[in-house]
Amino acid sequence: MMQQRPYSWSVSPLSDNGVGEPSSALWKSFTEPRLACSSAIVGGGLLAMNWVVNATVATQYLHPDPVQHALSIVRELGLVGDGACLLTAVDVEFNARFAAEEGVIVMATAGITSMGWAAVPAAPEVARPGTINIVVEVPEPVSPAALVNLVMTTTEAKAQYFAEAGHPATGTPTDAVVVLCPQGPVTMDGQYGGPRSRWGAVVARAVLAALHARDRKLNE
Image 1: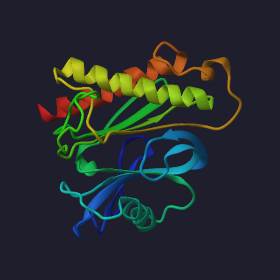
Image 2: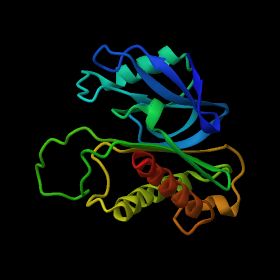
Image 3: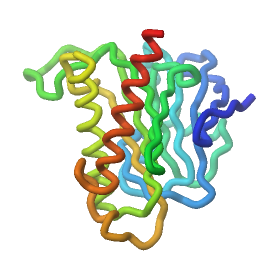
Image 4: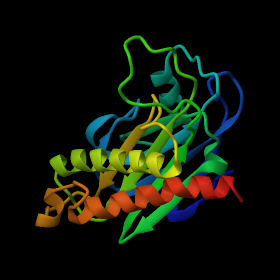
């Protein structure tokens, strides 16, 4: 049975987490397609999206074809059109965190068991599971270049979270980001997405707040 979450996100059960066990997916659909920049395994690149999904998979995820598994999740949810499907070993039903500021909405799930530095010596050891998935919604149209820049700003904010939380890392090996905005005419505010731009500054603060909310919940 579908359950509602903040900011029109929903949680639905899934039949297969990649090893034949039940799991769940956090998803959101849009009445009008959103322009997006995405690093998702399904729905990556610059495209117009009708929906976005963040699905829980097994901790030891060894599915032979993750793309086809992600597409099967989308079909099971009954979603149509184009969108992004993110995968994570974190239980999205209980561990999603949200933040909002000035119309920007951020959803984040964070598993940081395999956190580390981006630049490491050649041929590093195979990493343990760990994924930070971040979905950012900007309330006004922005240019494709600004969307790319907002992905960069989101990543900078994630690295700031690691520094402020005292973690010696910049992220995990399998982090993913999706940034979406409405389609339409772009004003001057929508031409840029860096951390001191109109929307970049808000996005950075909201991403940081959503990630810190994870630690506050764990410490309750």
